[in-house]
Each structure stands twice: as C-alpha cells, then as structure tokens.
Length: 115
Image 1 (cartoon, rainbow, N blue to C red):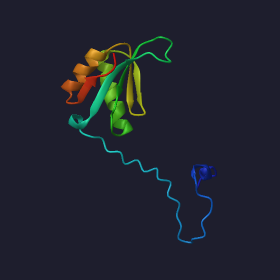
Image 2 (image 1 turned 60 degrees about the vertical axis):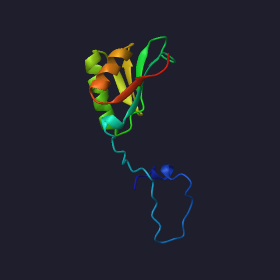
Image 3 (image 1 turned 135 degrees about the vertical axis):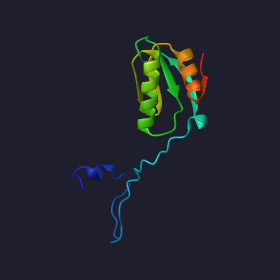
Image 4 (image 1 turned 90 degrees about the vertical axis):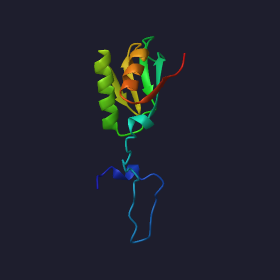
C-alpha cells in the first residue's frame, strides 16, 4: 500500500471487523458501445478559449483508448489539432459539417447541436 493511499478512502474512518477489506470502487469496466448505439453531439464552442472556435464532440460512451482513437481519426481527417479526454473530443476550428459527415460514414449516430 502506498504511503498516501489513505487520502483516497473517502468516508471510511475505522472498522473493527477482521474480515474487512476496503474497496475503493475504482473499477474501470466501461465497455465501449458499438458505433450504431453511440449518440454523439457535434457543437461549436468558444467559451474560455480567448475567442477561438473549437468543435466539440460530446456523448461518447466507452474507454479512454477508444475515445483517443476516434479523436485521432477526426483530427487526421480534418488536418488540425485537438484533444480527446473526459468523454469529449475537442477539434481546433469550426469543422462541424466535416466531422458530422465522417462520423456518419463511420457508422455513428451523430447530430449537430447548438446554433
């Protein structure tokens, strides 16, 4: 056990049971849904980005590796930079139409969201 592992024990103070084992509940068993079952939203955002526009793809359900793989494919198709983390993909610039076409061709259920 790490020396700072006690910080992750939210809510557990003390147990008198000899059979007690602390379960942190950090099982990463998020299975990636098939593309046909994904409901993705493609939207334009420029809040907290110094006025620069970015295209966001939200609603991805699955593992971080699959999210990064999809993000890499979208960045390559658009020829721009971006990132993929926390269940959303960020693509630099306004590429909503192109990303929507690429996602639909790949079999995802995607739609435009916002203005």
